[in-house]
Amino acid sequence: MLHHSGHSRQGEGAVAASRGTTALPAAFSQVICLSWFKRRECKADKRVLLETEGREEDLQLLVLQHAAHWTLEGDAAEQLEALFKQETEDKLSDAMADVLELCRERWREFKRTTRRDVVQHCDAYKDKDRKALRHLRSLEGNGLLESKAETTENGTEIAFKPTE
Image 1 (cartoon, rainbow, N blue to C red):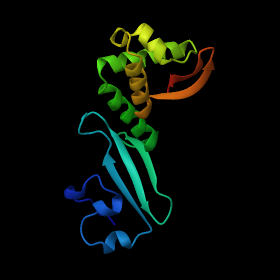
Image 2 (cartoon, helix red, strand yellow; image 1 turned 90 degrees about the horizontal axis):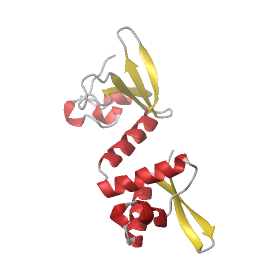
Image 3 (cartoon, rainbow, N blue to C red; image 1 turned 45 degrees about the horizontal axis):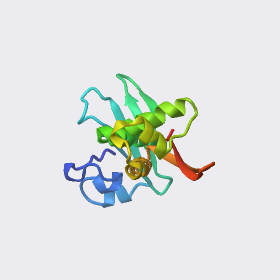
Image 4 (cartoon, helix red, strand yellow; image 1 turned 90 degrees about the vertical axis):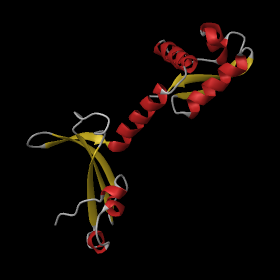
């Protein structure tokens, strides 16, 4: 049986997006919803989000449509998280983007970044300790950095590294 979604509820779960009577999705133990992943943004994107709902475990997968077959692209949650991180980075101010880049450069050398490092290396933060720490915490809140308290000769200091 084929039952397709209504346009007014597009983007909702498989059961909620189904069109017609609710008796149709209720009759099945598992409902599968296929939708384009990022087709609105890029017409050449052939990835499809496959979501299931029902009595068994819900599933979200990303599959790639070829002419005669499909290939698994991975777990949709991972792709959505990467997409969210990229969109968050794209919205950063220039100063915050500089802080994130500094953290990444230092992490390549296996060094964490503190507010003092930001003040020392980023022109926008000269003599602005609080602003540097506030922006580091903001980047952490957006999931782009992780923090760890480290003990130094000057006491405890919060040090940051980029998320994986």
